Length: 415
Image (tube, rainbow, N blue to C red; front, side, top):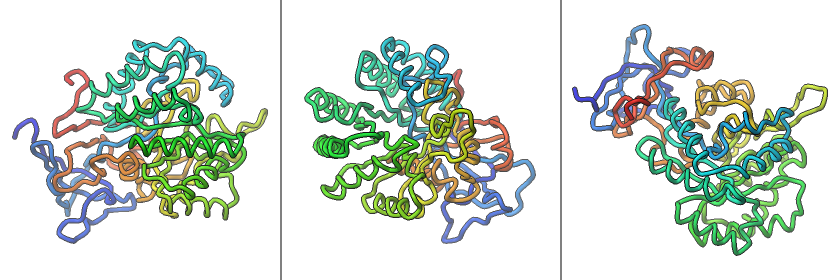
């Protein structure tokens, strides 16, 4: 058997296995896992075969995963630019200071470190927002475009230009948008209250028209707030419902939507679904920054209402957001660690289909990846092999793992 061929017996989530010959592969136990034999050749998987009598000690296997929202340009900057108070304003102030001294070389160094970690932890795609206005913007784009090309055989790197949404209405913003479109990037922006509703609607209208003209998607930082529930989303929906949108729109954060009254949340989620607007929940950074009460422990945490969005028909993914920068002091680009934290913060249980989707198939759909992450005949031989046999073991601690990319075992020393 050649280096690009292999066989593996393992436990896999039943929700990520395609039915064979019209029959479902059986589930064993309450973990939602099925025992299967996986085989691959020429970089592609063959149809998974059920194991009627699984031996003890089988590993838990997942497809390589995707993170729909990170910030590679500022990762690992906490040590030099900390935000010990953990406030949104403190994060913004430290971020602006860091941005002044940001260079292409610095972003290359920390971006390379981030992608090494991401690949070793089992990520196959990341969408990174980039601070795209100010002294560090050009160097950041140069570095991340270089890293995208360097890593393209192992990780798909998507890039989003992060600027105030009003910038897209200026001549400089239109020039930037053309450069972003030429780089196959997306138009980002920040919609966080308090703001003037009319000005925000006009800015969103201009951004959507520009994105449609250039064929770019849109990914907004919207309602990252613990006040004025869903204020930004309401403005966005008003514009999209009036004018329509022919490009994909993603709402990242939506933290304050979770604070809206239940019926209001339901109606807003249904409106999002009708307009095919997608959502990215970012529980780690939001739990750290938002809902702070001096001298007290927060009981109510602003968080995107993931389950209600799902049940309304919205495509919802979960992202890590910030890693060791002024916005969040921890993280390691590890999707298993993100799952473990989301178990607590969002009560997302990966042994349930709706609990696993935000890290797998929904993340792939939101990012428009070529592979949805379902293991089937002809799917890429891209797998995470965990040295555990159950979800509980996988979430107890960061498990040891091997990474299969295109049917070959990945090593950071031989890449």
